[in-house]
Amino acid sequence: MARNKSNDSQHEILIVDDEASIRKTLSEILSFEGYKIAEAVDGEEGLKLFSEKTFNAVLCDIKMPKLDGIEFLEKASTIAPDVPIIMISGHGTIETAVEAVKKGAYDFISKPPDLNRLLITIRNALEKTTLVAETKVLRKKVSKVQEIVGNSAPIQKIKDTIEKVAPTEARVLVTGENGVGKELVARWIHELSNRSNSPLVEVNCAAIPTELIESELFGHEKGSFTSAIKQRIGKFEQANGGTLFLDEIGDMSLNAQAKVLRALQEGKITRVGADKDINVDVRVIAATNKDLLQEVEEKNFRLDLYHRLSVILINVPSLNERKDDIPLLVDQFLDDICKDYGIAKKGIEESALELLQQYNWTGNIRELRNVVERLVILSGKIITANDVKSYVAMN
Image 1 (cartoon, rainbow, N blue to C red):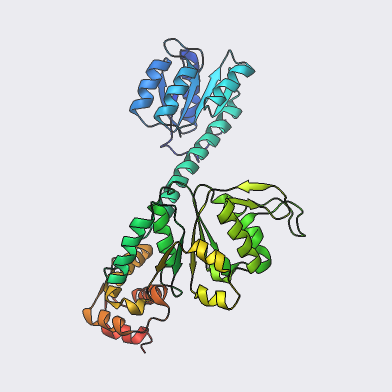
Image 2 (cartoon, helix red, strand yellow):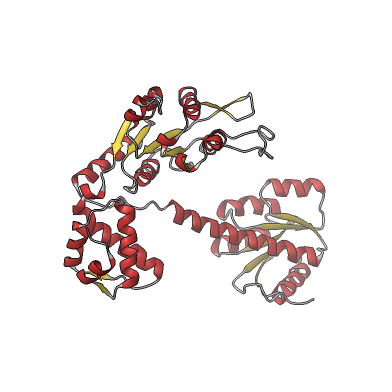
């Protein structure tokens, strides 16, 4: 048998079996494959070891004294539910295998085990464990919402409003120019809401062609139109129990607006090409850079939908209206960007900050971040006023 050199020696497997010969055989095979091994003579000793130490996988017999394999499985699953437990038994029946899997076993293997199947099962189990761990890390990174940086009066007012509004079910309309941080406001409302453990689903209405917006929002059935080769679950269904963020809602077609209005009024949606209603429990936060009341006058936006969406109005000021916050924002961006580049955080001269505060920020926060990134790349350890003059097009 060729040793699989790709196995990581940090992977440790617990073998729980009352038969010494089985433990010895499994231990020798798995040690040869590069795994670390711990052994337990029965379920009780196995559970004690499992609760005291971290294992990457477990091989567990079913028929054992003191604590049988099924009991071990139930108790171990409450201690570390992500650790795969592979049941092995010489008294295996389909009923036993089904019961083990129902109670959370990763797999069931009969004795004497087929060695190739055993090794493949262990490798697959360990890969699954690795993916679960990586997914948790990624979710943690993704779910970490960036702070709303600033101490200016307009920003403090927004923070106060978010704290009051977030725990309610009130719909919120966030307005402001492009690049001011409307999405961040929506994320914080969700983060501080009672729905924070459910999904926040985002839709950029301006980025979706008019003919596809209904399918994007409400989903469609297979064959409902030419390119509908399979069923699609829409954003409203994806956000069920959570929050739906409709960004740039001022660009939504009137036909789609009517269906969104119905969804808000009745809590129901219908997929394109279907005749069955689907109940949805969604909190909607909308955002726009347009004057929606002006859009209503010009017959581009429904007044009834505007009133449904704007229970709470939050206007995010432009960066030019909150220039006192620029030093704090620059410091935050320097911290984030330098971490991303894996370099020591760069400093910035007061005179350089003063020049940045004089700039006309037509692109708002987004433009400021791009400028700080440019300065990080092109400047020395300390960003100077000359750097700002050289690398930022001052008005």
